[in-house]
Amino acid sequence: MLGLFFILPIFGINTEAASQNVYDEAKLFTNEDIQTFEKKIKEIKEQYKSEIVIVTTNSTNDKTPEEFADNFYEQGGFGVGDTHDGMLFLIDMGTRKYHVSTTGNTIAVISNKRMQRLKESIEEDLSNNDNLGAVNTFFETTTSYLQEGTPNGYIYNKETGEVDKQKYVSPLKIIIAVVSGIAVSIVFYFSIHSKYKLKRSSYNYPYSAMSTVDITQADAVKVADFVTTRHIPKPSNNNDDFGGGSSTHMSGGGTSHGGGGGSF
Image (cartoon, rainbow, N blue to C red; front, side, top):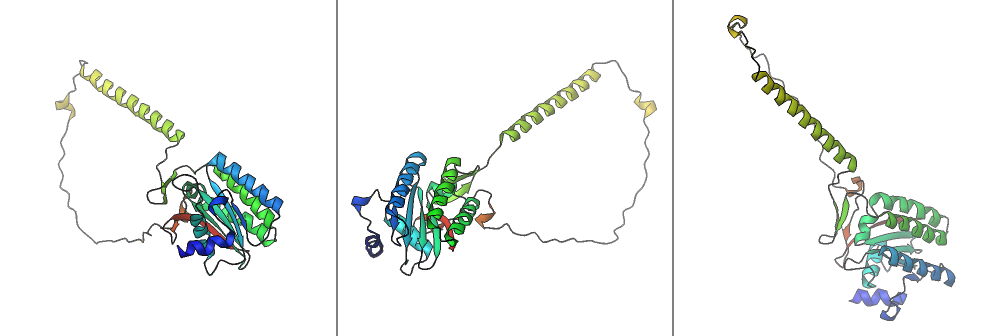
């Protein structure tokens, strides 16, 4: 509870301002910019059921950007539904670092590969001191991902807070399986049919005249033993290897988050 009262009053979060999603403590944007951000956030929340929070600061109070972003999102009560779907974009001007924290189903939507592309885009703007451009890039990129939805084969598990890989069968694989099954059935049918057709014929095979038996002796001699070894590497546990997977971590408050960040 101490952390709640320590962070939230600094940014003016209260129950009466529950609709506020932009906290510009570092004073990077004009009032018009903030109003535009708030409007976009509202539209995204209504259309894609994911809540976005923008935070700028000059100090994270001895917390890492990841810890600060996760705690701010949780203690502010942000997110849609019982899984609190959404994300927070933090810009820390004190250390010139940024972090994107994802929560709930949004973790699965913003996969590791998508997060990497997002980071590369906003880092370029931030490095050029184009903070407004960075936020606009953030909106454009994340909106396109929310529109595309979760990558095929992955789903957010709200029980574990992790992104699970599902078995995915493409339409092409289904067609190949059906065609293969039909082909095997046809071959099997004609094979059985030909056997029964032979049995019904009057053909008599002269086995006494046509058969021979030739018995020979063969000896096997063991010469030597050969042993071949090879190293089989263990599969990596790093979620970054997953095509659409998302790395997750548990915050100090016990909530699962995804995301990533960097310096500028």
